[in-house]
Image (cartoon, rainbow, N blue to C red; front, top):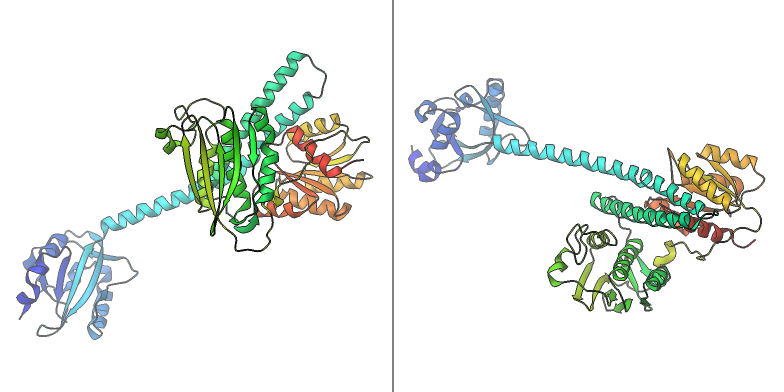
Length: 505
């Protein structure tokens, strides 16, 4: 036979075990790796049937497969999609991967099998499977946590804020007024932290999905100017928001969140001078730039500004105004939207953040501010009692809201569910406004609004109080008689929204 020439040094030095059989299934060659893999001396294998290397339960089936392969020989993996096992001399079976090929140059056809021990690979695959399952369980747990936290963490803050607003309307000593003012600051700080942490958790878990569309920029810029005029003025800063007639393509809500964080951050770190928002037009993109005359960022700290809890001028856990989460949220949103954000800063002279967005391809588009509730910024006590139905399944929030609204002169009906809400409107002669929480056990505030309007009329004004950002909630923003309010909602915010919807007497 020409077997020595066919085998040669290549087969002996191959990394896998090589076993060559004749058409009867007798082993005519086994390399060193085959001897090591199966525990036999090479002489013990030669002339023996290849089924000796297969566990007993599979030998009959293997003979049939071997005969079929001999009738239609071709190079291929053995048992594709199946888990194959081999038998060691000591009687222990182990998983293997086998590739079959045909040797046709020899006198008579020979069949070669390259055999690899798959024990380690299957162990790694099993570990990866367990890791994926653990990750899936963790993601599901995080999703459940977010759903719970968005509601349950904000509920007590909601009650605290409304109770604070009620107490500030009562006669009290200067000392009590100061204590309430400090309490309001603490509640506001807690609310900012909870919102920031939940935003980061949602972004990490993939709970926030961008809704990409074309939109005009100027209404968003105008909304940002109104929103940050007072905070800038309180610090003695000038706020410059230039006109921007561009249209861009992205998620308008998330772009607005990016700019809000950048402007808030600029005001925070600017002690004197100005903060500016402008846009720079290009052929394919539009750049939004937030500039300030603030303290600037040391060169060795620029790389850390997007880390959680990092604040300029101190360590990662420095205690200062804010929590160092705003830019971390910005960074995640920029990646989510696949945008570009550039930072330029000179220590002691200021910082520039430049956000690049793809330009729209022409046409007229909705504005980014369409989703922002328009309010008058002022509220007033009604000259005559207006009747409000408030729906919430949290007893603490329900009582706190009733106390606030009654202190403002409203007549208040309360309900804890859709069924109770429909019962209440049967009992009252009229209803001027509906305020409802979004999550109500198995029901939603959207269902409450639709059902109550079906009884009262589609023109009934409604406020939906929610920490939810789903498309279902966003869809209500196109209703001119609905306002969306994010939890935790402060007393002044609620009263302003109500006044805006109710209008003058």
